[in-house]
Length: 175
Image (cartoon, rainbow, N blue to C red; front, side, top):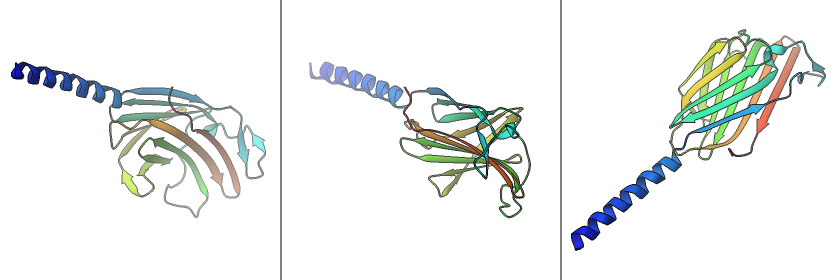
C-alpha cells in the first residue's frame, strides 16, 4: 500500500512540476504600433524628412529563451556612421530597450554593427539583420521564465548639427 501511495505521489509531483515549467516558460508574442510622421528635430519641430527613423511598429516574440524583436520604420533602415564614434555626429542610430520580469536588455544598431548590454553592464550576444524597412534583433534571455514587462525604442539621425529623433515606449504587461 505504501509503495502505491509513493508511486502516485511521484506521478502527481511530476505532472505538477511539468505543468509549472510549461507555464513559466510560456511563449509570448506582441505587436506595438507607433504614430507615423512624429519625427522631431532638435527644435522639437515635427518633420517628414527622415522616414528612415520614423518608428511604425515593433514585433516581439519569445519561444523558450529565444527572443526576436523586429523594428519597422516608415522608410528604409539606413547604415551610416560608427557605433563607437560619438564625436563625429554623423550616424543613424536604432536602440531597443527590452525589459523582462528579471532583466533589462539594451540593443543598439549603427551601420551594420549591433551590441547588446544586459542589466546596464554585461555584454551579451545578439544578431541583427536588415530587410528594407525592418531591423530584426535575435538574442537569448538569461532565464526561460522571464516574461515581458516593458519596451522602449529610440531612433536618431544626425549629420553635424542637424539631428532628428523618434521614440516609442510601452510599459504595460503582455495580455
